[in-house]
Image (cartoon, rainbow, N blue to C red):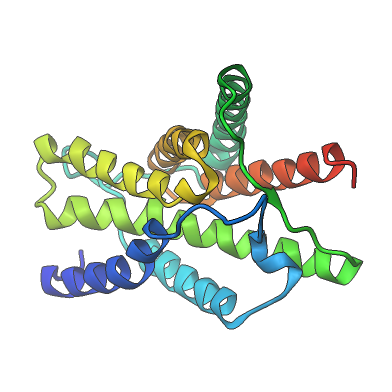
Amino acid sequence: MMKTKYLFLEFSIIFIFLVIPPLFQGPTDGNSVNIANGGRFSLMIAVQGLISAALICQDSRTPFLDESGRVRKFSTGLSFLIWTPISLGLAMLSQAAFTGLSMLTGTEGSPIPVFPESPGQWTVYFLNLSIGVLFEEAIYRLFLPDALVSLTGGRKKLRIPCEAACIAIFALSHRYMGIMAVMNAAVCGTIFRIARIRSGRIWAPTAAHLIYNAFQTFALYFLGGR
């Protein structure tokens, strides 16, 4: 277990500089949004990759404890094979449900992404997408809830509020995509967090999240008549 003072400092830095800014990203001023930096690599993408790697390495040295404080042991490969399709399937169902609800209510859907125009840009696009997914999982499914639970003393009565707060923060970081995206992000965030807890690490929810985002990208690309 990390010392409380160090954990509090790390939590504060990550929360202030990485968690708060996305909450103030407003709706786009047009009908498109630049996802995965439009197929261009940037310094921010590299920084996100390094932060993700650091948090994952930190987590790998920390034993995963159950509610009674005992170390839980996992069959990593088996957990990955079980929880990746489960979380992916549930996330896809959530997306389908909110897409249908959006159509029924006439709610404006998510803006269309700005797509790459060359094979090289597509390669960088999916590299950026992969790093972005890993970054979100490392922050919202790994560090933020685990650190918040630890900082509150691991009290059972505070665990659910801590988990709910982290899910709400993740969901609200999608408000620039519209209300349906926020609600869908809340459901998917819950699904991926459960997958992280049940599998012991973030690889299952990361794989599911990446496949989910890639499917959405291809669906928008081809259905958009590209």
